[in-house]
Length: 56
Image 1: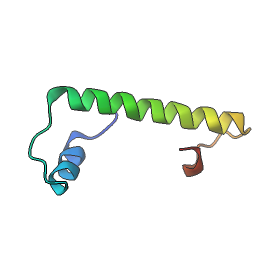
Image 2 (image 1 turned 90 degrees about the horizontal axis):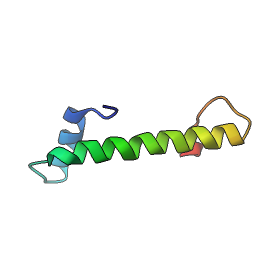
Image 3 (image 1 turned 90 degrees about the vertical axis):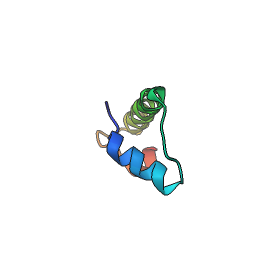
Image 4 (image 1 turned 60 degrees about the vertical axis):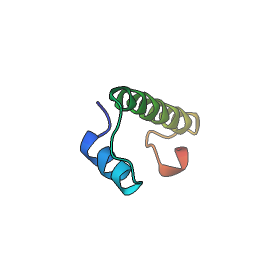
């Protein structure tokens, strides 16, 4: 698991949500993983070995 369940629950509570379905975390992790991989690819394409905020 990439994302921290407790922190996600806190964010959802701030947004006024009480519950989260079981498949929500799985899908969120998939999106986060893809975001990381895309950022790494952009850094490589720009000749860098360091991923930066601008790669997102």
